[in-house]
Each structure stands twice: as structure tokens, then as C-alpha cells.
Length: 383
Image (cartoon, rainbow, N blue to C red):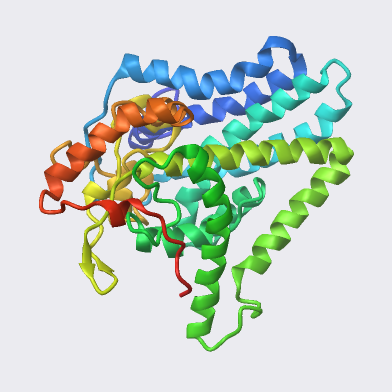
């Protein structure tokens, strides 16, 4: 029996209501247009909202330690899944609409135009790439294509290959490019990852084709799709906004990539799987990822901060990712927005995190007295 005055039946209305907090990210889309239409002080609204408002909300609403029912069906999760699907066309129309509008907006100064696209990069990186991460782990072709579309809009398509074929296999080992080493500042991590993640992703796809007896030039290599989608985005930006629009598009892509790699940096900083000899490492455990149970930032990041469970069940949809307590997995003192800001200042980051890493080592691996080999980075070998 339907509730009077509503379109949805009661059970469906309840499902939609439970999913509603995760739809807050869509509010960033009209905010992007506000910054472009009004300029002035409004150009700082997107960074302020994404970084600071959700941090304030974390302090107000606290932690979420509850777990969703793992028996939830796809229909139970419809309203959660829908927000990731809606975001893709919303981001596309906003990004390229602004590429067309901003270069010809006479009320915007050069600095204001830059800041509008800096803010757009904050959301295409914080939300867009995060949603692509959720979509790329799913099995159906539509969601995987939408993941590729989101990554192409920030010129980082190889992230899918690197993440699925390298990171999930080698996380918390020296062969994983994006596992930050103990004492490795973000200023060193970032240029290294930009260089090595592309190489390791290409090698992984090349090795997969080689196991099938195929050369890397085979059309099954997804890098041809990556390059095609990225080139299409660059051409579209040039056609819509001219050289100025193309430059602004590149600004948002650069900011988005920076936002992604800040998150990659904090997710596994200093955490390592025990080496068992002969190039083998222990299986991935919940203790090999940093977690944060802060409620509001998990709304924004669709539970990405429940990172241990994601590595345990990579294709598990975000609403049913499980929380791990401090007895099972290491906990960050704050949500990702605060921690990424701390990561930009290496002395502050080391003061916060290095004692926690040392405590983690003593708790889980008291028998290891020499951590030197674990602290060093080695470029992933060809596979």
C-alpha cells in the first residue's frame, strides 16, 4: 500500500531515504555553476565545501560504526547505485558546459577563471574519480564504461589498469607503486607515482596480453580505448572553448589527479605485508589499509574510508562495505579531507602518522626488527 501523497511505495521510499546522505555530492554541481556565473569570492566555494564543510560535518555528526546487511539485493541498493550513474552525465555537462562558458565570460578575470576550474578539479577528483573507482570494480559493461568516461575527463584513464591489475594484487608491498613508504613525503611520492603508475599499468596490460600469446598492439589492449577517450575530451574542450578552454580543462585535470593521489598516499602509508621469502608476501589483511569511520566524509566519498573491506571484497558495492574497529584495522584520527590537507605538509604528516605506523608495527609484527627493506621503494618489475 503506497503512502498517501507519495509516488514511491513505503519500502522503496525508505530505501531512497536511507541513501539520501550519499546524494549530497550532487549539490556540488550547481555550486560549480554559481562560481562561474557570479565569480568574485564565490570561486572558493567548491574547495571550501569539499574540504572544510564536510570536515565540520564530521565533527558534528560523528562516526558511523554500523554495518549494512550483507544480504542486501541489487534492488535494495538501487538508490545508492543511481547516484554514481547520475554523476557521470552531470559531470560531463558541467565540465564541458563551463569549458564553453568561462572563456567568454567577461565578468571573470583570468584568476577567477583559473579558480573556477581549480574548484571543478576538486570535485572531478574527489567525487568523479572516486565514483569511477566504484564503477570500475563492477562486472557489467555499462558501469565499467562510465568509469572509463570519468577517468578520460581528467586524463587519467590508465588508473583503471593500474588499480585493478597492480594495486589490488601488490598493495602494501614494494611492487605497488601507490603504496606510500614510511617517511616518504607526498612531495616525493607524487612525482614518483605520476611516472611509475603509467609504466606499471602499461606493463600489466602488456603482460596479460602476452599470456594469451598476443602483442601489446592487439586491439584488446585497453590503452587504445584510453587514448581515444582522452583525445576526444581534449578535442571537445578545444572546439568548445578554444585554446583558453583547453588550458582550463587541463587545469581541472591536473587538480583532479592531485586529489586522487593525495587519497592514494594516505590509504596505505607505511603499512606493509610481511615478506615470506622467495618474493612472496602474506595475504592482504584488514590491517594493511588505513580506515576512517567519520560519517560525513564517508557520505562524500561513498564509504571509501572503509578501505580494508574494499580490499577484502573489491566488487562489493559501497553501501555494504563493512566497518573494522581498531582491534582489526588501523584507524586514522580524522577523515580523508583533514588527512589530505595534513599530507601536503610533510612535517605535520610525519608528526601525526609516524608514531601510529610504529605502533602498528609493534602490534602486528613484533618479530620484525629491521624494517629497512620495507621502507624502500622499488619500481615494479615487468610482468
